[in-house]
Image: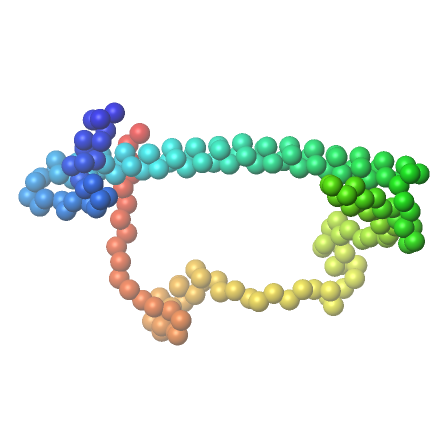
Length: 170
């Protein structure tokens, strides 16, 4: 493993600054930098993969806790509605207080509406229920137009740049 870091140390300082490539050093100089770049990109990808796996494990644990919480809340609600010892509210709900833990209430039965298919509801109700959103710029189309017309509108800038590509061998 120390060999891995020896070639990194040849091109990067202890302060994570890249040493300049010695001109006239031939292709061997570029080779050192490309090995360091390849190594660091692979390390970065391993860290990204590790982070994704850890986050997936955490998301799975959270989903499990959410399911248990939902089940516990449902059980408390079911029991409160069935238990005559739980106080009734004047509006037709139930209420209970456990002073050292929580106060719990269940409202009266109320009618609620769920939108299952928004497009179908919109077709049925008409366009007065359309939510207006701010239009956004088609960036690709705008860049093509600016490039072809040669007119640079306010809010856009132009600069020269080169595409730099490295394809590592497996």
